[in-house]
Image (cartoon, rainbow, N blue to C red; front, side):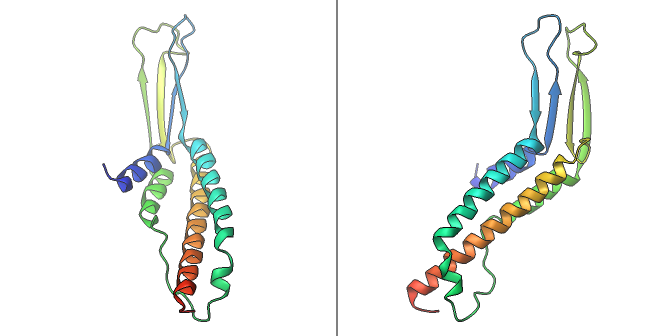
Length: 152
């Protein structure tokens, strides 16, 4: 599996919210996965790291005499998956066999806009910040590369 496909699958998976409560009668397994909250934390951390790395390349773009033009970050292919994870929505509920307690008998999975919170939209906003930071870093790296080659 290619890295691009893996990145897309991770971004899509971060739109999922799965809840299966703990069994009140002593059952051991349960599941709580809040993908949008994890996405906000992950995208925010990556954006912070990227912005810190931009500081290593900061002087480059200001030393150029000619504009760079369009510079690609290399992660533009993730936009579709991030928008889909925030906008598309479905809700699914099922029964866990063997559980008698009505409060823990049902599991639910919600995706994207079907989640009853603003976390999918917040994840998309933080994703946009991350993509901006990646674009800024790519621009700074390209500017420094051109300065090293002597073509300001």
